[in-house]
Amino acid sequence: MEDYLILSGLWLLYGVIHSLFASNRMKRFFQAWAGPWYRYYRITFSFFSIILLIPVLWYQSGIPGRMLYEQQVATVFSGLALATAGIMIVKISFEQYDLHEFIGMR
Image 1 (cartoon, rainbow, N blue to C red):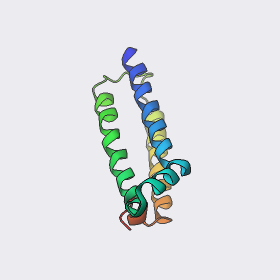
Image 2: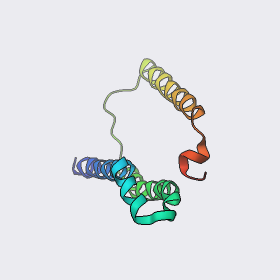
Image 3: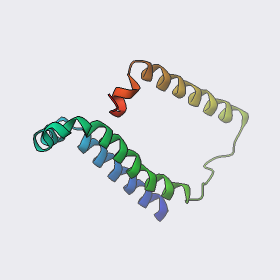
Image 4: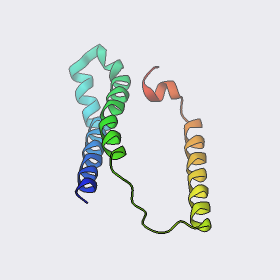
């Protein structure tokens, strides 16, 4: 149980840091501070977002999983249907973005 509390704290910390650096207030601060170098803010943000995500996922992968209920055909099918719907939503969402601009390469 302690592992899950630590994991929750890590995800919360990651979310707070990510949201803080994605906020307009922080962007304005860095724009004033960095001057012409601000154009690299987005790519730097993307890089550090990935770097900060690695220890959270590493810690999460070390926690043994527990089954909350017995798997049945209906639950497996429902899970696959939800995962497929989620992938489709992500795909449709990313069609609205220029990926190079999104990660800061443009």
